[in-house]
Image 1 (cartoon, rainbow, N blue to C red):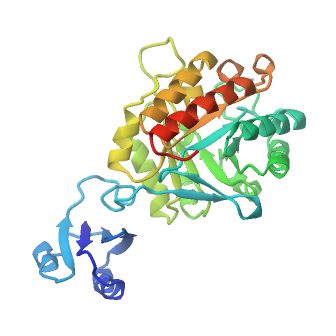
Image 2 (cartoon, helix red, strand yellow):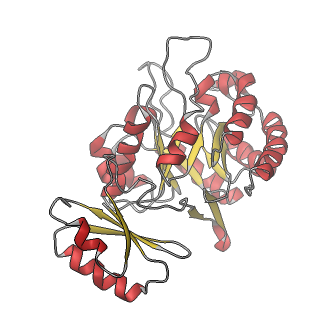
Image 3 (cartoon, helix red, strand yellow):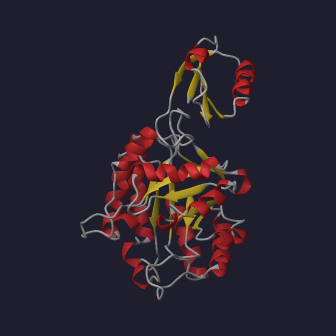
Length: 341
């Protein structure tokens, strides 16, 4: 249930009103706009009388939420969420809320020179975050699985060298103990519905980049986000990374229609992964531009300084030079969308 308070209603009075509702066994989510405050009620609201609420002089309108996701619902939080990720020296990197967040780096961390050199290159080109896999889920048990804890140390070294916040994938709960220095935790497509892991991330206070599963609907992605938010962590970035269809000319089918759909239904920022969506480096720039034009709040792009020798997904990685050229165009696209890079 959503209760929109009348414009100009005092916050002290609103909080006292909310306390009376909490005594009915519901939890209250506050969303304060420029002129109006919205209360989101989570729990059993069947015994709460709408007419009685509307009789209150503070209440403007009451809306019953039909969708199964509540906290992720735009009705609960009408304004776009902007995630702020602290950087070194008091700097802050933003995603959402008018900011285009660009995350770039290799699929996997391979060695020190590789990750540090790429980090410096993507930073110079304008990326705000460094991506890199230390723990890698692979379809084949014989494929390179990442360097593990050694890879994490190298990511932290690249972060120290460049000041870029790091984004890396968490595969299991026990790995959280080595994620202290990670700025944004990525949950891969295979783990989108690992509900035990999602519940644990609800108790975490780090931003979570949540990728859509290859056969997941938009609603299922939002429900996965709801699992994390129900635990108290509202710092979530939704990621469209392609879905599995009958066609095989690309690795997956990039569902650009999911961007406006998600942004209509949810206040959470939405980014796109054109690398995993297409699996083809030559398609990445076109799909990246299309995603920004469709309203995406950011991109996560695979960049490698020697794609032909990459230990993982080299065929979908663009070079630092290609990434620099892409960034030149994306700045113009972002300006047209009224977003800052």
